[in-house]
Amino acid sequence: MSENIDVFEKLNACISCVISDGSFKKAVFSKSACDEVIKASAEAVKIKGETMIQLEIFRKDGKAHHKNIDVPSAAEQLCEFAKGFSQTNLLTQRGNVEVRVSKKGKATFIGKLSSEPIGGNCALEKHDHDREKNYILSPEKTYPFLTKLGVCDENGRIFDKKRAKFRQINRFLEIVDGIYDKMPKEGELLIYDLCCGKSYLTFAVYYFLTEIKKRRVEMHGIDLKEDMMTECAAFAKELGYDGLHFSCGNINEVTVTRAPDMVISLHACDVATDIVLSNSQKWGSKIILSSPCCQHEIYSQIDKSAMTLLGKYPILNQKFCAILTDALRCLWLEIMGYDVEAIEFIDPDETPKNVLIRAIDRKTPISCEKQKSLENKYREICRSYGISPTLSKNLEKT
Image (cartoon, rainbow, N blue to C red):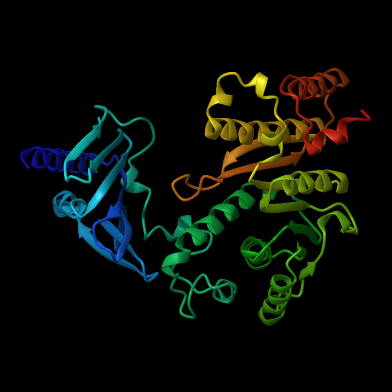
């Protein structure tokens, strides 16, 4: 159909434009016409100093196929590739556009690019496979702990399915590096990873502090899954990580020998995050890094009459409750003596669970007036929505 030709010519023009001016971020292809293909995506990379567009095709057999396309022919090749999918999303720094193909085969172009990039630097500079100096863990080197955890093979090649995990690990280490100066300058560091699961971050943080920062570290990973803790303990022993310990148990039953220098927790589900925060504060942890997950408690409690608009739309109500949950957690930590930030952990394109709560012991107490103001603010929010979060119990006696 001539309309379809116009649509794909328009897509071609958009791709060409954003690649040439550097505002290209990503192209996502979904709903494939080929039974063997699930989806595909394209991003800008640098290989041996040359900018390329890397097309990654995800297949139903679990494998991913990569094709590197030179910039001059990228727009034409990506546009032609898009014809094999019912939906194509072009993400750029000038806005996003989309092409949809109906069951009857009619293509529709949705969206419009702005005339200027919407903030930030050139997107093509962000995906540089040669920028080893910007990685704490280089993708060109072999790390035995990553091999043990199944992130890469024995030669250091990162498995296709674990690339997002590798980026997540590096991003977390960047955050730890950013607050490293808040840790004690001398002596052994004491760190806990609560609800540590498979312990990717536990091993990574231990490696970073002992091998890169050259510190003595006592680190404990704790989780309810006995098989995982047994496996992680075996890995730690094989790697010679004498200061890294794993145990199966309830995080409410942990006895600490002294105030931890840092407590971390990645995606502790629902109120488990609140337990992590509560215990960390009770133990006197100097630093808390917690990435929340599955915030259901407030959603089940909230007064629906107070949600006259959002209450009509369950998914919006759920998202609001998740945001409210984390905002109250941040406020609670402020009340408890921490400087708090909620930051973006990783790219939201990879997971919507990308918020990290970063809390650092304030050391200098705030005024009684400011303290009371924060407590009253917390209680008033809870009253207005008819909720009683787990952390609010810690304020009942104040």
